[in-house]
Image 1 (cartoon, one colour):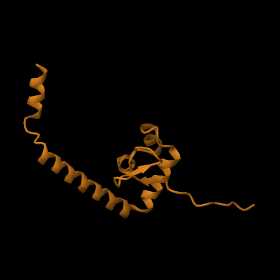
Image 2 (image 1 turned 90 degrees about the vertical axis):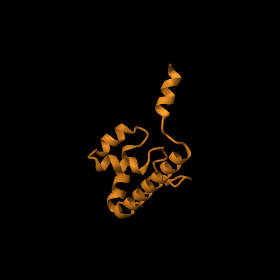
Image 3 (image 1 turned 90 degrees about the horizontal axis):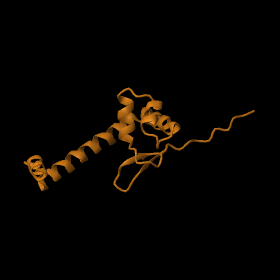
Image 4 (image 1 turned 135 degrees about the vertical axis):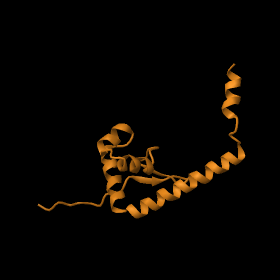
Length: 107
């Protein structure tokens, strides 16, 4: 008997903001990769993010291991975008004294 093995789609999708999400959930590729790089097993990742199926975690990790340079480049780009956005927000909304102003509203 011959086993017919169809190609499987990696369960990742890019949303309108350019963020790659896993398995139709809000969990990002960055989240899964960071957990895996920190030593978490696929089972631990799936347990921590129950909206992501265990099979999807394994599939995403396999994709990451096969395409590390592309995934790393994406992660670096996302970090740069986050830093730029943080700088823009701090320029628009000066965080100096925010804690004091909020605490003064309490009392």
